[in-house]
Length: 390
Image 1 (cartoon, one colour):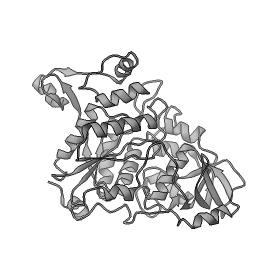
Image 2 (cartoon, rainbow, N blue to C red):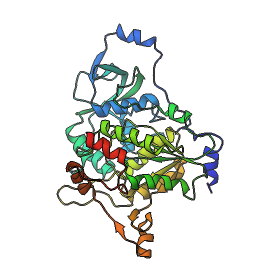
Image 3 (cartoon, helix red, strand yellow):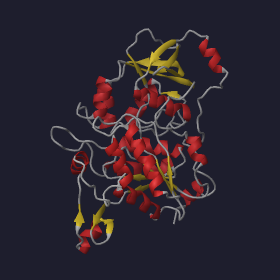
Image 4 (spheres, rainbow, N blue to C red):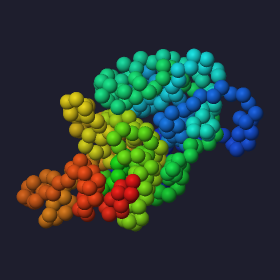
């Protein structure tokens, strides 16, 4: 049974956006002519900047209407909420080394030969990146990919201010806006979000389809498979390739209870903080529930092999924030494949004395390179075909 809060949010309509309104920062088409005849200062954007700009424009970061100012940035770093009291996992800021950009300037944000937005600079400051790293990522080690990113990729100054959206970045993969995704969701059922940044294998599929049968999910709920296709860890499969695997798999399984969309988000591997960030984003896309996996958005030290976060830290933090966020969490099951009964929980397999079959990611990649047959209990044929082609 779904609890009363979920019924209130999802039985009469899709859950409301965070803050009550889905922000849309895109300007009317005729405004573009004004842009062409105005001499703006121009600022070139990174891949990560472009993801943030797109998510701000389409309302995925609602209720934000632009990049955070210094006070909101410091509040989010310190206590994972803005000065208005809204939860937010990680700060959303524009960065630059340019000293000529000043408060009050209107700046054209440019990315790969496209003018994306106009930023009206309302704040400019030099952040304490050590404090940002420690509070947001729990470490100051450059082994953590986000700590390395803010220390070595992000520039000296942060900029905050309102945005006027001109156009969305051109991408190899189409990314539906929150408004478009919401239109495709059922108005009278729960929507369970599944976040991933890797190709989907059999265990993933079993995990998110079984989540539809969780006690706190309505009987005819759907799952939104919503992978991040922006920048991620260096050794991850590129977003353009992952996109192909998702498209092929959607056709292969042809499951009406699965909705598919892609998220132009750059991963930070921030564990608990990132779990909150993903929940806020998915609420804006119309999801009432969120699957929290073991060690979600976690990463390891390359020197010691130790995890930066505990295995259930993200789950516990998300659960702590879920009531205020008016969403529910669905813990992911620890599934294993057995010769006798297929996929079951690890606890059940152990108690029943079932024969568990394992295949590590390293072994899987080696088999792919060597052209060996991949067992179908581990990976979908369509996914394997795409990975071999690329």
